[in-house]
Amino acid sequence: MAGKNPRLCCLKALQRWETGREFADEVLHQALQRSGLTNVNRSFVTETFYGVIRNRSYLDFIIQRFRPTGLDMPTRQVLRLGVYQLYKMRIPDHAAVYETVNIAGPARTLVNAVLRKTIAEKEHILQQLRDAPAHIRYSHPEFLWQKWESRHGGRLAEELCAWNNEPAKIYVRANRLRVTPGELIESFPGAKVVDVHPDCLEVDRLPLSWISSGVAYVQDPSTLLACDLLDPKPGEVVLDACAAPGGKTGYMAQNMQNQGSLVACDYDKLRLARLEQNLTRLGVSNSTIVLLDWLQQTSAFKPETYDAILVDAPCTNTGVIRRRTDVRWRLTPQDFPRMQHLQGRIVKATVQFLKSGGRLVYSTCSIEPEENESVVAYIDKEVPELSFVETKSSMPIHDHLDGAFAALFVKA
Image (cartoon, rainbow, N blue to C red; front, side, top):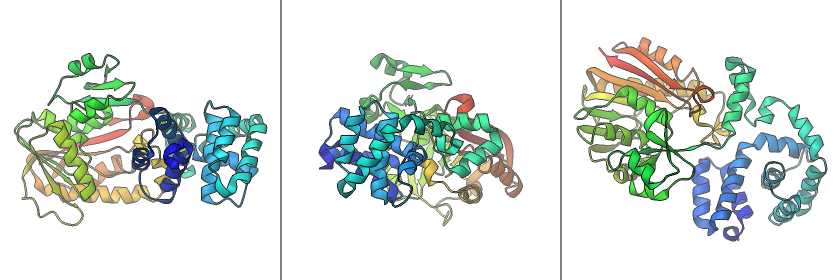
């Protein structure tokens, strides 16, 4: 039963992720909820699940050396799981092989043979990996590596890929609607304030009581950049156009001291439910939640209603690959122009609701110029009532935070 075997639990989660369109975080969350595993085994499942996804090209390179053709996806996933343990974890070889073969089903003989060959020829394989192309060594899609190498040069592109393959640090934002950062630190001495933002703390493990009680929200400091640029004030009427899951909404409510009006929109009912739960837990009392698809209809609002609008647009998420491990494998080259078109349409749909003299911030968690500077240029040309003011950004290999971009406009 998967619930009593951590490797089988991990394997089933990997197969579900591979064959579906769900985000890895959600797949793992549901798998662990149903697993009945101890904390130690849950940690093992988490490490191996994300590790296999993160290192997919690297693992397939090894498997290809011993089984170049004829692998169905379930067997490939078993082999990836086994090779990951042998090459990336401190697990005795015999234990990794024995436990992996036990969950291989009809492919037991094949899996056993391939894993034993990867052990016997490990030094030779590692040398081949050192000589392999960068997109294999760092396990990124080849088109994405080529894109970054062309833009940043080989050394910085490698640094970016290496950054994406490191486990993300845990940051939380102290929710000043309920508590001060100092009070949080007193209750959890291992926490420390992050230099780049006074409300953000770095912790070595997540105090779950902080999250359930709403005194903190898991949030990289880079996500606050757009809100600080918008600078919503107490008493203003503010629109968060693409609000779920609510991290930026909660922070803006905090800065508004729960005064004025904060309207939070999203197009998906499930995402909206999660947004509502988060805002309730954080103690946000000045918000109204609206189900709205900006590309379909905007009749819910009156023109020139809002003092400030945040358009935290859907994007390719290339700035948060370290934190969202599976993003790299969901991307295609066509996503960048597609997202650019979508982002521009959302801004054009919202601008009519901004008051004269009001502020609009366009933001993404992408590091791609197509979704950032190019969209700013599009807005400057196609939305003449908006005047560009400034941009702020965060780049992982320079700022050691998630990637983020924000541009401030003012309505003439």
